[in-house]
Figure 1: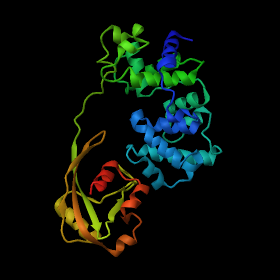
Figure 2 (figure 1 turned 45 degrees about the vertical axis):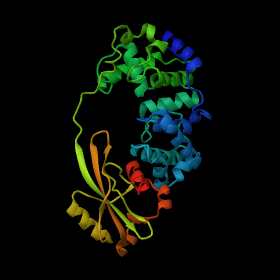
Figure 3 (figure 1 turned 30 degrees about the vertical axis):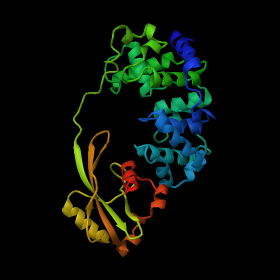
Figure 4 (figure 1 turned 135 degrees about the vertical axis):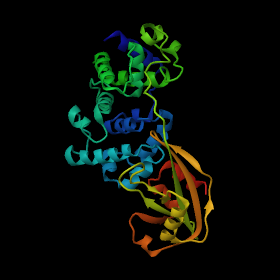
Length: 343
């Protein structure tokens, strides 16, 4: 076993995380679900979502059989809803083509919607102990600093180099523990800001630590100004306290989720509200900003209280009046769910 892996595993035996809920049992379905949830999301945030998800859908077949609203409702608040749709679709493919199980063949696994090379490697290493490297954000940060690799890790040439190094360093023994160890080190010690180099088992041979480059590596992605978009959300509430929700189309952010009808300006908001219900007056609610990865959304909610439904809403599969207790079963964007809870 190479010295890098030896040092990392010795550290893991003493300091690694061994009581995460997806580790007991550490089967392929639970590992897969945790890996997808942990993309762009920290462990402390993921744990309650994971527990809620596996309680409702304990097996891959349960996930495949669930309707999309159930899946999105369980995912609601984690963001990046495309991950949930890929998860759902991949489960259905596994039922159709792989006997209701995640395949153990790397190419077949990596070919499933939303999985790819690193997630496939993590599933096979964690659940089956097979020797496959991984390269998530934490691993990229550890290797970039340890090896002194310059250039943004998202660039193809840099990522190719990192994959070669990840493969070379992954041991054939204790692969599951090694995979968890390098992720743990990146998440708890070799963190993005102010890494705890004094607690790192690799610091002695780390180039970034030696050369004082821990604040500069990994190389940051070239900056780009994030634009702000404005929208008005229509909160149509009837006398029974039901809110009119609209299913968003298949394109754009929050695609397929239930949300509030929107308009680009106040005149459009009134026209839209009048087309959806009989209304009397509007009350502005506190505005807020929701930040996506590529833009900021400035939201101005307008409350139309005591609205009365038009008949066409009852005949429309993408519009529904929803009581407060019914919203838990629907996939709603987190800011919309918070807005309605605050009413």
